[in-house]
Figure (tube, rainbow, N blue to C red):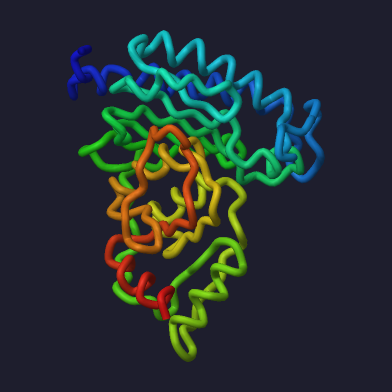
Length: 271
């Protein structure tokens, strides 16, 4: 069995990973038009979700560069055919070459490139790069989370009153009903990239991020670690943490919150 990556080995990876993420952004950005339609070719995948030539180009680039960076790691990406061999690997790259493709193709700035390295099913490294906002969110397990190199923490709020919430309207409506009279929530415009939705909870600009069913590992794993290292949690509505690298990397409805707000949200949700 291959030896796990040591802390020193992980630290040594980070400068090259940062460079790879910026090169990936350089591939995508020429196709992005802020406030306008992308110049990239667009087609539909099975199920009807859109994909662009930028998604495919970034995915191919990251497959080569990340596989060279950690050759023993398996691969799971939104734009690559799944290889079940990943289930037998301790190390797995989890990649979304463009998280928020609809935002990317319509000129909305909230899209990102999300990369996680799993070790035994748990995120070890998480990196979310938002090129249009010139923002990097980064975490290494046990070493905290940063935004553009500066440490970040979730908001210190202890209760739901006045919380800033974002996500699908039906989920927000249910939470509002369960929170009792006059919860005084502030609704934040929905953030198209799920990775950025979680990252904004991590940086403290959002308190409650709601995620509808059918999110995949690649939507979540990188930002999950950023949020954990910033003092938050991603969980289902029973309070269970999010598992990764299963045979079907699909999730039900999820919640992203500071750890202190998990129980108040679950209580309101269950009413």
